[in-house]
Length: 617
Image (cartoon, rainbow, N blue to C red; front, side, top):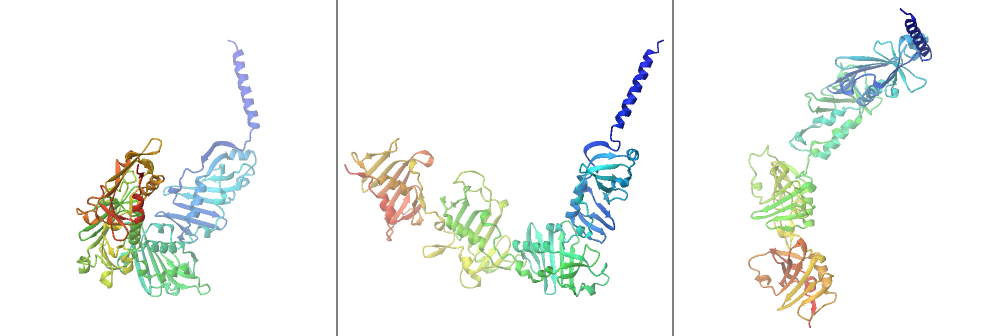
């Protein structure tokens, strides 16, 4: 047997050992690399329920109860959630970069004190309901933007990336919530304010604030919002006088001495947060003694809280009769005995009369009605809770207004909103005729079951002046005065017929006009452009009436004059303007053939329509 292979193997082992020794000598024995950006703690802020932070003589301890943070040391009070969240984020974002174990520290003659960990700069305990971790915070590394820490009872020193400014310094005042009410006040569903001069109570029902006490009424959303802004802005000071409430009378906090008490119920909680306000500090009247139900001691609140005393319950009442935003309304129905007019919003934003005829609505008239609806305010004098039956004055109301909110279902400038749907939001009101006397200024809201007393002048805005009289459910008052809006480019043929004479002109492919009749005639220079400009925006002076079977009074039964426009494209085959007799005021009764509307044209418009198109041969 030969020993040579064995000697070769022994030599190879010795060389490998020497290589390892030499490599170790040329390597930094203090540091062992870790995966970059591995988390120091595998936690999320949502699960953390306990925190404590100690540095020198300062120490704070916090716990989370029902989703809110509270200080338990150095005093018991609500904690500053923003400050705590900043601290938790700094911990959760901390990442390990390297570790120095005890063996390597000993080899280099280093101790925990060398890294600022004996004693530590700060001690931080982070806990959940079932576990807690202790982090000792040391010095910052000379290079590399690292901070030395140790975790729990481990002897390793860990170099981490950490935003120290989000953790230190430990100032107990920073961790105390400065607000009188917590941020969860935004989820409040009920509010009660008591004072020597009275009290009021608000409750949120179906997304709408109502006054529950001392009367039942809808609350003004804007005024309630201002009230919450006042509560959210209130600040509190530190602990006053002592650490207990054993003698509330001395602070003006007894049952009979308190100047104000504010109770707020948050959603999902049975018990309210109660703030009881007492006397002013003798040496600083801008602060008042207060008992806050989530504090274990007498505190101080800003004197601004007394502004709640100046808010009477009646000032919070919503005096709008209709609380819908007028811009969201898409359906209007006005009824007065047998008269009715229905108007629907088009997808282009305009309005269309859909009953008793289909006709474009006057934008200004509809806008004025919507403005009157949105601006109508009054005092609620009776409500459904108190009324067993409708009062006689309500039963006698013949005028009804229905408004509704709906969604567009199809495109097109002349398409109306979908048919009335109860789920879209619908309100109906009965209106008294405006006039002298209290019974002539009433509005009854059928859905709310409430009777409102409104100013007569405001109620009168719901009526439209038509001629020399006010009308309510008259479609004539809401019809648009635009009778024709032809595009000149679509007009291919014009025929003027009067007194047995017919003039016809036709547009060629080149845009020029030629005479069809009478034979041999010539086109009057400038007549056709002026006529086309007129019918592109033919406005009625007024709408006279809906067409009846008896057109003789208007001399439209056999009109002696008609102007017909032959069209191309999708606008129809032709449009014909019929001209009848005079209205006695220099106007002429007119119709568009096929429409059930009689209107009056001004003298100037009539003369322009009747201007000859063709010269005699």
